[in-house]
Length: 579
Image 1 (cartoon, helix red, strand yellow):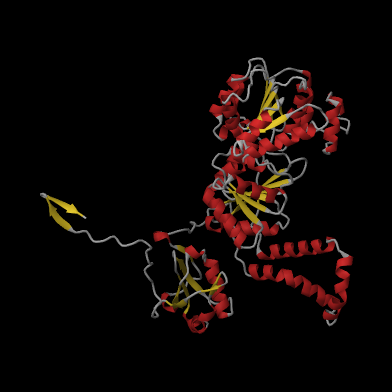
Image 2 (tube, rainbow, N blue to C red):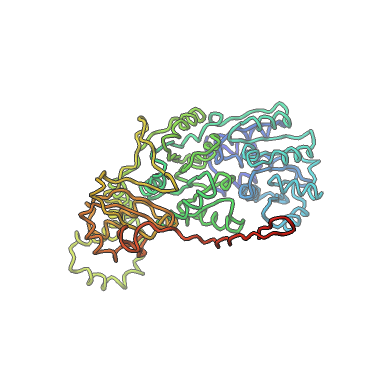
């Protein structure tokens, strides 16, 4: 459809002017189907489409067109699952109606001052956009009257039910008149949504964009197979092989979300977290950074990300697969919007493989198996990305020119080829060093893998090196452990730095809560002992010594708890009292 498409739909010319200023050109599929229908007929409607497919304009433009601005009663209510989506819909409606005098829309949502919203409601809006909990509160306070409304929109109905708003939705809908139009939009159609449609809608017309419960058309679905203990390493490599990534990493729990975000930040990635423990002010701050692209990676739980609507996401990464498979549809639907391509990635371990097949059946698409990239691939990608950025950078000649004479003199002794090598090495050496001799993290998804090694007895973490005879090993003690975020690769790196070589044979590594043990070939123990002062983990010097040396060996961890006093027994009126 050409640029005249919106004009041919019968929309108010003032709306056409407003949406053209917003950059609207061609109607999206959901808009082509819904807008003419809602303008021409008084009917109930169920719209099945992914988030980000243009639903707000699909219902918003007809509602504004049909509003009587001379009537100061509330004529339309839009219900949304979250504060963020509520605000976004309200701002969009205001932009659409910019040139329609006397049209008023008010946002009503939790997590904000109720007094400010009451003040806005006293200005007699014709449309209210609200979250269910706060709207029901306003109704019970008799600050909102829905008895004369003409239209109700349930946006992202499945998400509202997932968030536990079933009772609130029922209570609100019971306050509305029988003669009204109800428009229900949902990405998926579970039983609860169908039940609401049957209870509160009559002869609803169903409009579907894409297959029911299907993922977005422009999204590619990939999965990587690694041991559970290697998931974080795989995540870092996936991010490094995609230097321009702008995406969300989904975790199952708040604890995982905080832990992964903290690790990424410590490792130098531009990341932050979004989870239920954040205050509203903290959440708003993180979201502002992410929307303005000051953050590349947002680590979030499903609950915290509900209603989150951000454009231009390149990747969705499922660090943990969702418990509810339909949640995968919502996750992946956050990328590949407005005709752009996106990628949804799942980092899996062997026991989760069957879930890939289940999701394939749900979304009607196949996942592509990919191998976790190795160090060489990552270094090559980062190198050429850096060169591309350098080639396209804007040069501020007037700012740089005063310094060029000094720069030319300092670099005069270098040839052109040497300058390029020095420039490349300045940024590139850290990737070369980090990924040099990096291990293969992949598990063949088509074969039965070896039993994964994770935490064994007494909470130990084990990673086995080359098989050495017990008499050929020297055992060392390190005063640093899990509480210091130490992992086997950190111990290996420390050994390499102490000995000045990566050829040393390493045996078993055991990481405890506050200390660790490792084994090396006994022929290397002398050089280890000579370089104990070079032992560092995470850039901090640590105590290392042979395990059988004085002060080495296995130490009992000190308890922070105060010892309980010994009990004394005393005869007291024929009974024994313990005190």
